[in-house]
Length: 392
Ligand code: GLA
Image 1: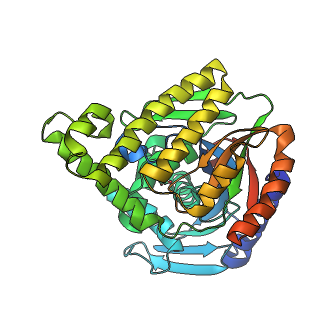
Image 2: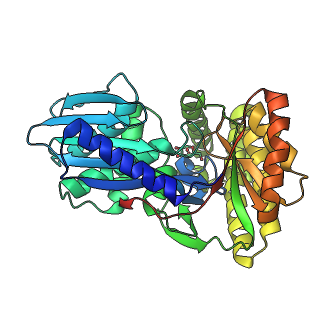
Image 3: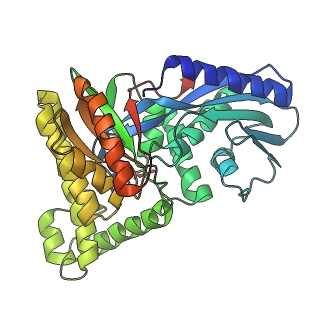
């Protein structure tokens, strides 16, 4: 179920071989950039709140080399497709996958940097559309690779920000900073509590004896995600505007409390009220959950996960029947400490904290139930917390 190092290194070898085959060039550099999980704090990043992500053992591997001209030659190992363009004309490809890389190149140029032409092959083991942020991993892999290849001298946070901006302006998803931050700053065995307002962050050891992170993948691709995601973001901004009429000092939902929402948002718009209450509550839940984790009270931490799911499903409305089904089913299951949907929503995975000895039984039990109820094949992965983006 879990990704083994064996498979990861196999993939690196195959991506390198492909590079050699496509470009006949061996002066290369290889970068690993991981996907992420998020324990709690969902849809809080773009509201200047807190998140608690970690980088995982599923990653994208990117091999690059310099070219002597101004061309960008990209090759997707998984799709077996190539894309070529000139550095002088970085525009959306119309193909989707090259845009995550081109968006980063464009952001580097916007910073006044001049990466040269390059060859690139990348391949990944992060399931697409599963909410593990394969897109952020691809952006971070590109930023990191080009920074190394051309000696651009960028620090990690700058690479995080430009990768996020690539997704915002080039791909068109108004995502927050969490995914790129986790992919770059991840540390083995640690979760990151990131304050998305100040960008201060603290590592917490995820020291949970005998408990593992199990991801149950609905196999529902979150196709609604980008449009609904941008709508949620606008709704939160609309809530902030309503509060600002009375409290001009308020800048984001981070500065807003439940009393302000009841007084100024509830009478104006019920939907916006629900969206904003979820965000304000989720921030408080995250802070309480980190305290639980520090106290070693994993049962209390697990309850916060269920609370988060309830809010995401009923108030923020970014869940789907498949995610709700999985969370509901495991709730009373022996050995399951907590569960919730993870990431942007509308599909992807649930994140579950499960006692070691209960994992196999859980997967064997829920797979046929899920098949029967949803007519889909469930996939399960164990999320191992690993280091962030680095050279291989
Ligand atoms: C997506 C976005 C993140 C974050 C999550 C929800 O993964 O890319 O920035 O907003 O959704 O928490």
